[in-house]
Structures are given as C-alpha cells and as structure tokens.
Image (cartoon, rainbow, N blue to C red; front, top):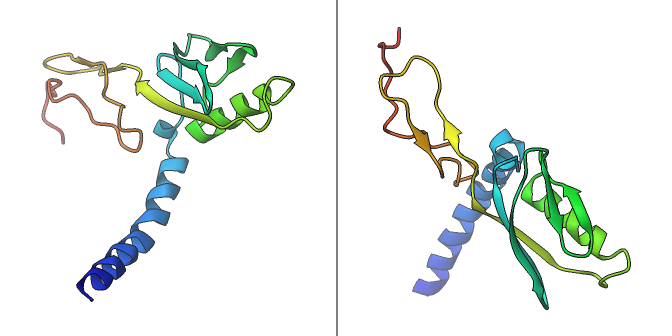
Length: 142
C-alpha cells in the first residue's frame, strides 16, 4: 500500500514537471550544439563507431564512414537523427545513435566587470546557463 502511494506521488510529480521542462529545454537556444562543444557519439552494437569529437569553427564534425556533417544549431536529438540518417544510407540498417555533450563550449563574460573570468563548463547543464561566480560587476546595477 505504501509503495503504491509513493508511486502515485512520483508519477503525479512527473506528469506536472516533465512537459514544461521538456518544452523549455527544446525552445532554449542553450539546448543547441555549437562550435566549441565536444560531443560523444555512440552507435548501438558498433563500438568502433563510438567517438568523441570537437565541433569545429564552421559547426561541423567528421564522423567515420559518412564524412563531414554540419551539427551546429541542432538539438542533441536532431544531431542523433542526422547521424542515423547518414549511417542508414548504405552502412547500417536502422542505426541507434546516442549523442551527448561531453564538454560544453567555454563561456566568456565580457564588458564592464571587476574580475573577468572564463569557465570551460559553464553551459554543461544545457537547460540553464550557470555564470561563473568569479565574474563580478564593476558597477552596481541600477
């Protein structure tokens, strides 16, 4: 009985939290890949195709067998679909591709700051930007 009540509470919390969070993650510009992000790509059942790569300045990566792919401005899900589509063009049947950001692009804080700072993983949490605490405004906000 206690387990059923706990399960009902957990499912209720998921029902109210998930759609709003998912919508905000997809709509957020921070949820897209960009030059400077390092991504890890794995293909189910194909360990030789598991690779980590840096998105170059032009927003592309070079993936084994399929060559150069433009992934900048795509969500992680869109990137997975692009890679899977290219792999299914004569290489694999129904490939299952997983992409994750292994290291987010650096964030630089510019402008009128007392202590300029750089944080190599400030956007690792893709749903919200965490600004480095080292950057302190030089002037009070009005």
